[in-house]
Length: 428
Ligand SMILES: *Cc1c(COP(=O)(O)O)cnc(C)c1O
Image (cartoon, rainbow, N blue to C red):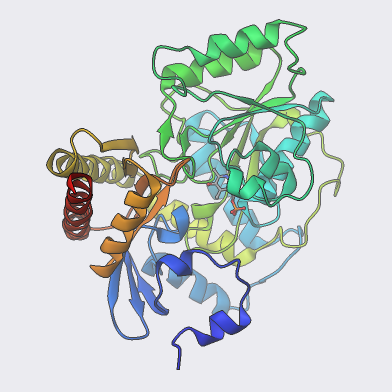
């Protein structure tokens, strides 16, 4: 009997990650996944950045177990609950206030990243009375229609079935290389009443493009973007769904850049436990919603409030964790640079920031072959990028140095095999 019969018979062909990792997983702890057959894999995908604190982190798990045992509320629409009260207080005290965002408020949206992006775009349009949004080449913001309009990826856009409108695409930082100033380009387009670019409500941007292939914006570019927003009266929305919650070495990906976004979207690792949870963080003056004007049944996932609160208290009340992310990010980058020097100094290069780093390959087929080889050797790792050419490390931030070295040894062997085969192919 086919091992995957239940899935292949009864689940839609939409399934995708499982095709790269054809095993059945049963358990997961920290940075490791275990299959039904007892094989262990190091997880360098981590729920596409949803498991920054690893699988089943003991402190977070214990908080949830205690909450379950006490019959704490599970679902609460947007009613006041003790768990939500604690989350709001903790998020304000531990994250927002110390980062100069104490006057931002939290909007709970439906639990996915796309839900928070939809809410952010809708709010920007409501507040400014304008419909156009600027988003960037290779940006990814989700697959619901509004978020998809802002997303660049053609594979996803192609499935929309309706026109994706009210977005003007602009070149991201360094899209044309480091000699072309894409901010001045935008400034010119926005200053010219006949450029054909309708005056935008907002700009939505990722500081590190997660799905788009680990393209990074510099602090200088982000500061200039913020200035551009002020000049042209556009709101600045930072989509920190993937790069936030510590991935780049700080809680927010932008916080060492000296900018203050009007609106921030967070989801993925926010619950700290892989539970669905998303918020929009917005400047108080923008909070012009009428009660219930933007709604959603699952805006009160109290389990996620509990786990998110535990994660904030455990990881973010001192600088120790953020420092460890910076150190591990540097270690991963160093190991990746070694792989590049060894197996393709002319065709490979390292991209990204913090623990959001990867190796760019000549093409998507090469990157896919490397991920497949890595999987054979016990490492779950995926690609990203406009040609799916970037082998991308999104491991849990709590991973040990020993596990990093083990994973990097695997990656080194996978690159060795695939790059050697490519050289041979070219020669023959
Ligand atoms: C994953 C992601 C989203 C969409 O989140 P979903 O939960 O998949 O809807 C939006 N923006 C960014 C930057 C993301 O990485």
